[in-house]
Image (cartoon, rainbow, N blue to C red; front, side):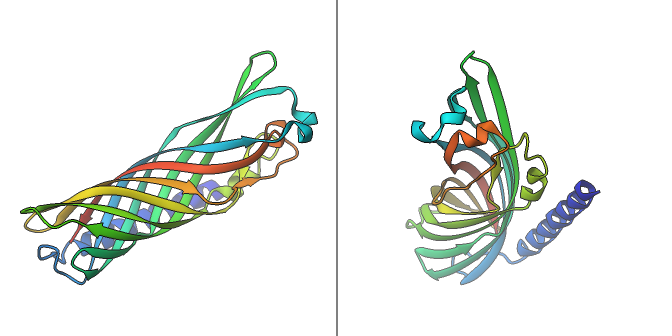
Length: 233
């Protein structure tokens, strides 16, 4: 029942995002001169964990775990853009985003058997960026951006119900994100593809003493690469 309820919530949020994004497209941007404007962000992400193993002195009960490696997993993003253009070359951007992500960690034991643990997350993300744009060349210009991103994992409670088999991560995560892209101006909207890289600033591993693989890990940091297509108006 909880899974059905969660799916209904996700579908409702996605529908709200689409409606708000379509309404935002009705406010046409006049060649980048508007003070405040809105848009939608649609993207794909590819993420993994930076895993730090426990020191050998503290891992007496996990000697059977020989190797730990992180595997990249796919996901996708859907967000709403709020942009404040306080200078002709500078923007402040808030992009509330619903982000789906799968990340895997592979463990190898002394007999070279592999066990993979996958963490499925549904993030409600609140990134705040400062963006610098180049001087326009006709209807085209480059930009770079950077800032902080806060993530709240809506799926963490579901993962915690499987403590005997599941790697656990904290609900809250904050990190730094930076990227680059370009703007292409069309008569009725602006298309802005961008590539971003995210890295956690704090350890997001949640202890799970019931799982030997969790005991073998000291720290975990989330890393995410994202390709986003922004439609702004």
